[in-house]
Length: 114
Length: 113
View 1 (spheres, rainbow over the protein chains, first blue to last red):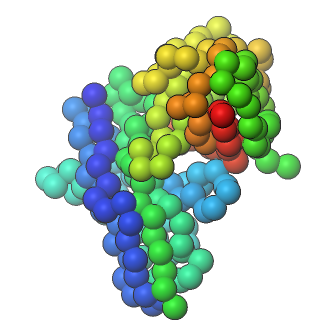
View 2 (cartoon, one colour):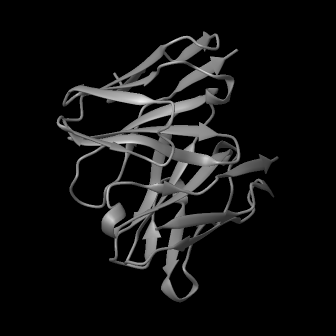
């Protein structure tokens, strides 16, 4: 079975500050890992994905994430937060017998203060 | 137009009523999914279908049923709605190749009184 844990259900940063959203996963097979973003009253939109190529993955809107196998982590970062980054972020994992079925973390709500 | 369309977007109903949420897609994907979102719990998989003749239960299928009417259509039914089925429901699709990335609809918010 696969699982995802997102550390921190709420994260608050100032505009221009570093954004760090934490994600740890559990998988018995090499995983595919994803970060999705959900803006209010919208569906989920893919930010970036890890597919066993480069361990540092760049996504949309200036976000990136680094796959660290030894730490079973896939933390999401952005050097400088914008007000428009305020949203809920979900980490997800799939792979092996769970291929095609994403298991999601519980979500982290990012608040950006002026 | 959205690639994955859900109807209705909002629905309020009463306990015991039968409810159907519909999903249609223009992405040409074979795989379709229904997820449920509750605050603080993330998304949980209800049912998924890898092609028209394939239906599979997810983590939380009790109280729900689905119908795959065509490659492009996948409906979720609550035969007798109960208040703890109040949630935001998402339909998603994937191509079945590559990484299994999901493409989501905008969600259907269901309130059961």
